[in-house]
Amino acid sequence: MIDELHLIGGQGGPIVEVIVSRMRYMANQAENKIRIVALSTSLANAKDLGEWIGATSNALFNFPPGVRPIGKPAIVFVPTRKHARYTAEDLMMYSSVDSGEKPMFLLQSGEKLEPFLSRIKEPMLSGTLRYGVGYLHEGLSSTDQDIVKTLFETGGIQVCVMSSAMC
Image 1 (spheres, rainbow, N blue to C red):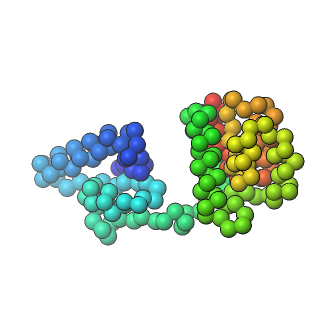
Image 2 (image 1 turned 120 degrees about the horizontal axis):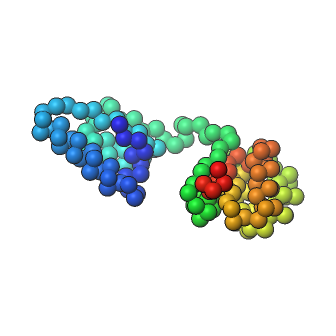
Image 3 (image 1 turned 45 degrees about the vertical axis):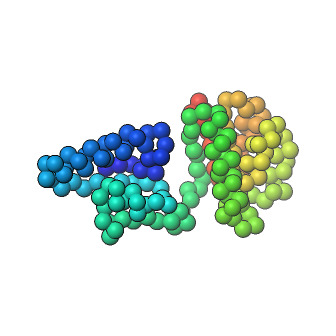
């Protein structure tokens, strides 16, 4: 079983490639059939990866991202401050592309958020909050941290990205 196959292009990708290739080679040499079950988020190249692990076309399921419900609310843990900010920015961009008039992660109107946003010191945080995405890391001011926590706990925003130090 391979979990998070979508990470194959990342840092741990070569390890997954070696393990899968070796398992398929060993099974072929021993003339034993093996079944590889791979799990992933939606993939653009699912058919190619399916063929690579030996899956037949009728055993391949690749659901588009739109069919999966978005958790409400969601906390996303990341390893560092930088990751917290970058992930929040990515979610903000995703929200702005797929949404109509109202960003998909924003649960309150802009007028209700404005008193909170006017007190935020970090400009990028203020920007992501307008899309319903907050982030927390140990480098933010205590005021900024308190505002993000309040907005998340009261349902003003739907997603909060936190560095592992904030666990």
